[in-house]
Image (cartoon, rainbow, N blue to C red; front, side, top):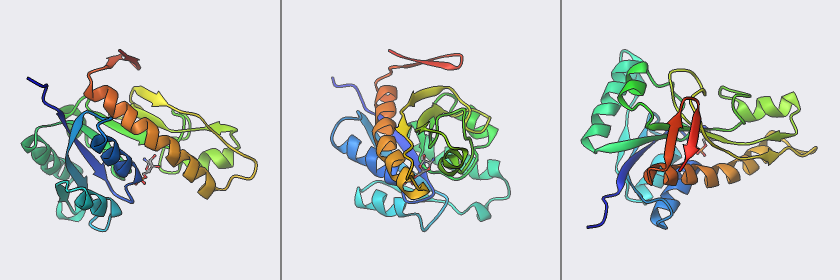
Length: 204
Ligand code: GRF
């Protein structure tokens, strides 16, 4: 009997270009998983339109309806568990996860950051790297732990910074690489090929 595919959920707050790359790679069979759920904390996120077009169930939550971050996370977790989600993928989700969330999905939450961690953590990874004057930057896919942009690194890719780069042109080239490495990391996880050893992630 064929092995059952792993259920994954993607959490987004914005345009969802990474979500689209993940949808496409699940559809093509490159990522052997099922996209069970898209969750957003922003009802206007274009990511929700992408999910609807692909026929994926969505959950929209307004953070203002919850007294604490943990209360919101509890509601998300309740829904993820109902759908037997095994991997949580953060793709432009503009909220910090509570320790409760991290504990419930320990080593099963991934994030993508638009800089070579541990450099340029935070919400302006591309702008900060450009302003600092680095010659090379690039996206990082990592597991999520209790600290911001900190968990074990799964994949990184280099993007060269050109002399005439603007934030916009660099965002475009960053996205091109993000759209390759995020599906790749999810594929590896779905195939059970990522082994966390302390801070290091071994690819089996
Ligand atoms: C990406 O640049 C990602 O690195 C960061 O948020 C952005 C999300 O973009 N975490 P999109 O919504 O996937 O287009």
